[in-house]
Image 1 (cartoon, rainbow, N blue to C red):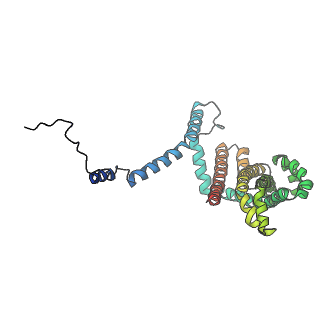
Image 2 (cartoon, rainbow, N blue to C red):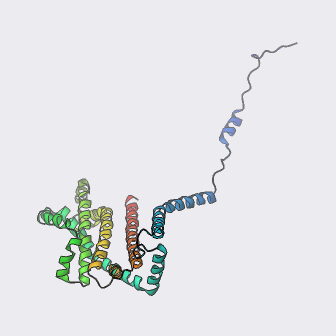
Length: 293
């Protein structure tokens, strides 16, 4: 009879082929389907945008409580529902769209009249030592003068015609855009300009292929600031000296104690400014992505 011990029996090793097959094959983990990913993205976007409504809803709730608490006279503290009804009435009558269109037309012409010279002047300030020496101090001094303070002077010189509003908007937009253009040109690396000159880019070609593409993002940022200021200054000028526009409509409602119409004009003014800022923000992000691409 033959006896075997444990040490006499050779250990059984798995086949190399089976080991390789077992390690190579792994069952795929169940991943989220397309529908699950799509719903997750939609829910994330909805939750993000819903967060923007928290503060307006809080303001609306506080406003409603103040009107029902009778802490202020009813002629002053109008209810949100009354403002909504007045908004519908002004909208259906065409008065609100007509005045808003007039104000936007003034804004467009005045902003264009201030933005284009502002870009050119800002580039000249950064590129020319002579322009900086002759105009730098005057530019800095005039930039510190509030546009609203200069409205009475403009009224004495230009009257209350359309030229007054366009000049005021142009002044409010010129200085922020010129300052943004100057700083954007100064931020261009000197080595980049030297390489461009070594490649033979001078004069018009240097500005077209190097300087202007490099300052677009900074100039658009300055245009966002300038557009917001221009819109506020325009509405303020219409409050003081105008025969049409959203500011003039607000002033007439104030004189006749139509506080609901005043609130409508306030909300329209704020919403319009917000939408204009978002528009330039989208343009700014688009240009930034193209530059980084």
